[in-house]
Length: 202
Image 1 (cartoon, rainbow, N blue to C red):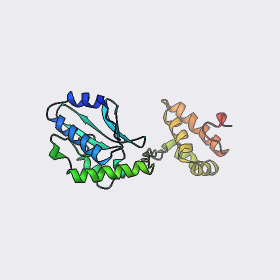
Image 2 (image 1 turned 180 degrees about the horizontal axis):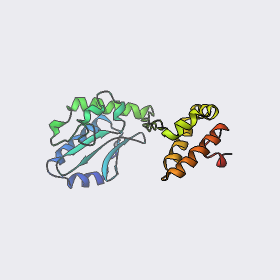
Image 3 (image 1 turned 90 degrees about the horizontal axis):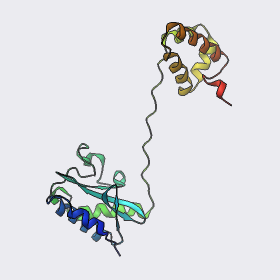
Image 4 (image 1 turned 30 degrees about the horizontal axis):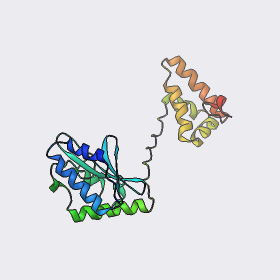
């Protein structure tokens, strides 16, 4: 049995006249395709839940409405390019009419895919944070390392974060005198195979 939330009725009733038929249509297609769907409000917008997990959601704005799948990146036929260049949230761009949505048949097929993902307990993998670029070695440190092979070897063998800690520490020095002292200290520690924060390492 599908569950209808009266808060969704109230939400649709408050929307602009152009948006109401769009939201009503989406709601009806979702319920027809997924009889066990439940409704809820999240982030002040209507969402449809299936098997205890978010499946899709819709929202109305001043000049457009949106509809999107929670796991849209995993649904065939719903991809980032479907976002029309990212001009709106959701997977179908800015909706100003029911005609802006896929046909009832196509939309039903997409909902069935979303249901299957929830049936199988599939989750959307989190995007990995981009790796920080390799630290640019200051000229003073590079010159000092050329004169100390042991320090240079340890510096090169260290991880990117190991090198970055030294580079940033030296780069933070505002006076040339301080910078020179830090370069000398860095070479001394590196020759011993120590990291920049070796005093705090256990």
